[in-house]
Length: 440
Image (tube, rainbow, N blue to C red; front, side):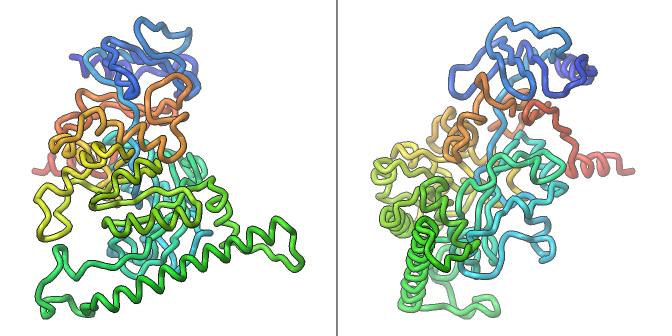
């Protein structure tokens, strides 16, 4: 009966003719930054929240959504995806996650986004309203990708609604994506293994060779930053013969501390090296997809360096790791006092981000912190905490209506709003479900 009431209310035409103004009434409201409000209301006008609390009344002409027995949460933020730039991994022409070359800071991931990607409505239907689209390099796959560049371009923060990438844009340059040089682990998920079992075309390299490659790449990276600083100085002093260069122009906001660098560093050594590099170059840093914390917790906390953790539903990184090393990693970061968000670092599994957070709860992370990791923490890390990530007056109305806790798989998302606009939840998964449900 409750679901029917909501469906009827949501089907009513807007009296004022605008889809971004409404009052949700009678729900349990979860602001994230404050205590839950039972039998609460959320008032939205022109796409922004203008009221939240008890006994709110709708202005004349504004529709009312009766949501008694339901819950209202802020929209979820996936802090690391390939959404819109990678459709079918096996078809090269549908993958646009990066370009050839070692240093490509001028590349902007948002202009490569396909707003008609089938992955977007599938992801959106589970309450994800905003994502960070990461350029992963020519090899793709983030830190695991082989053959990618070192600086792969600018990550974009976008809404999952819009006819064009311009309409989807929240922040066109949220961060500079960098695959920080590191000494790779031996081949295989757990290392070791029989060399005869390597896939065709793969060869095992020695630690000495790995170290040489690491030192060479790190030297190249430092030289590139030095060249960018010389360019910055030449531009400021209007040096004779100065010519604009797109690569170095893209580096200026990084050097000025306006845009952070996301350093994809999986292991403790890589995190330590990235922190030292950021200190030397005086740039803002975000650690991307770490697979361990080690002894770096106190330093990250002291220097206020946040992290974007990868999937918790993953295998251990090393053969001697505990079975729950990935599950419990968010709890380790929380206990160390390091601010973190969660990212799927994929496109097809972005829809499962709430369940990644839920798994972390089962392994020691407080439930409220898990919710923050996919809402307000993410918004603050990406510099838009004043616009989204929680239900507060003045923020965009990015929210979802559910019949339960979004971190639980049994929960159904009943409605999603992005900037106050009702979002269609129809998607390919639902169409296939209906198709095979009706099979003779």
